[in-house]
Image (cartoon, rainbow, N blue to C red; front, side, top):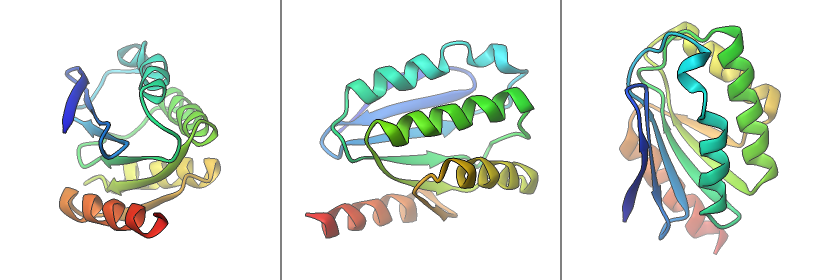
Length: 135
């Protein structure tokens, strides 16, 4: 069962402890790094609520073009997640090609374990099957 963790005008994060999964959705464009002042700390708090080998469904369809500061922040968060028990990410790709290129570059740099999808249902089904294979 999903529970709301945080919802801002820019993003929404839910947690499903029964699946050991985080649901991250971009909701709207942002102005700059100041809109993410607590973002890293929020991810740290999320990781504390999960077991190792957690998964993330990441809905990036509305992801805007990223500033260098946001790219750096996202890269730091990805590395933190990997170091603290992330198993896999199912990413629903951005509708913006430039954003997709940016996210791919960040994810490749941090060696984020992920697969890309065009909708939430496929992403969720993939993670469910992946977890079932590891049990």
